[in-house]
Length: 217
Length: 384
Image 1 (spheres, rainbow over the protein chains, first blue to last red):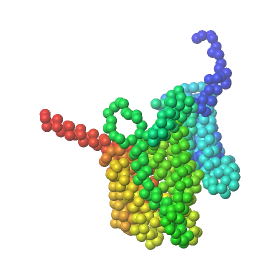
Image 2 (cartoon, chains in turn cyan, purple):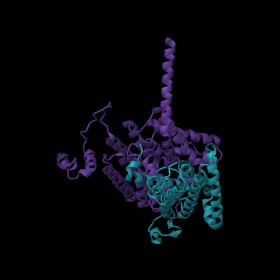
Image 3 (cartoon, chains in turn yellow, purple):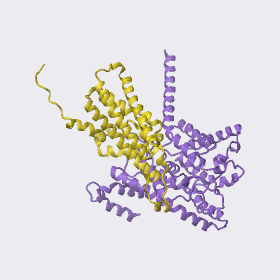
Image 4 (cartoon, rainbow over the protein chains, first blue to last red):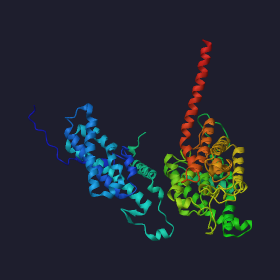
């Protein structure tokens, strides 16, 4: 055993900060890894449910990553998936109950999609790829980062869809009445899930056009 | 002609590499090849040498579109004055129709070509001619009273999302004109369906429902006579009403070999056989209407001749075209009769089969390969 004490890494070393920020752009879970698309299509017709969904996913990814990382040395590799699922399911149920208790109307709108966070690919992806082989603190940051990356896209898509689909932002009318009198109409296609897919596609297009290294063959 | 050629030759140095307007090269190229046959020839590979190129192909389709367009312009005016209870001569009706239709055509071309030029410029490729046809098709599948900003929005959507994201002309999986229509259909249903939109500036008391609209609410006694529907003196989208005019266009397409007669024929057969099947079933009044009514109502004929035959989004193999067309006809009639939310099924069925066209081609090619392999094996077996 060497007597040299390993130097302690600072909490927000550049490596750790990168865990937090890179999912916002260069390894965004939705636009680059193309995970968690289904819920992104389903809950983004309005900004409010999109926001609540984003918060829920952030909480679950961060905590699941943290807990699994704490347990990573004790989990037998052959049953690791089921252990991960149990942890995710536990957290999702807590989140679901929390939403039902405090924001019941939004919880109604999100309906089954809160429960479906369990199947959100971002979660399993991060647990398998990161939390199983990293320490708790970086895992927590990684979970937070990926949650933020997911939430950012959700809010962006939700903003565009609500603005053009219902003429509102966060439930407030922003498109003035005079526009409607001139013949402007809300775009019903924006409310439908295919438009969310097209919007995400456009975001991916813009991102890859700006970062050519993301373009794969 | 000479002075035009001289003028172009004089301007050319500015647009080639290193010239003053190098960036606008593709714009110049587009205008030059639009006016004169280009002197470029293909250098590599084995090709069939033919005088026809994409510009001539597209122009012939536009020529074939003139019949339904002229009729449609007249019909817009005719329906308007009919709803007002006034009788006019040919020219006032045509003039009114022109006032309604021309702005739609101009908007469609300006927006669509503007985007095409912008993309060609930024991606450094030639401006493709595909939009010459799409730009004409888009106004013809719109209701006469459609707001112009909606046309602009739908055209932009069709060109960018329907075409350019896949790589431009020749790469799109969906027919751009139908993409534009589908966009409006789902985005602004109140402007694209119902019984208010099919007659321009309709008098309120007059029923403006299309034959399909009548059938949808089980008013099969109210639909016009078959002869009227064949001639096209019925309310509907601008270019789709006259089966006669469309048939003339189809003739042009088939004689010149531009449009596939296999697809047209099999769409018609598919629609007829589904109609007959419903006749046998006969569960309600809609199922009991004569099968050939389906061909002359709504956009069936227009879709069969101009939309389903789109050489890019249709099936490519000869046998595949027959399956593709037949299914379009069948699904169109199926949607019409069964789905109360969509009175017209032609647009949706063509878009659906556009998506399936590559799959159909794949199986046709595979079965051909298998057949030939079997033949080869049998020969070997006989020899040994």
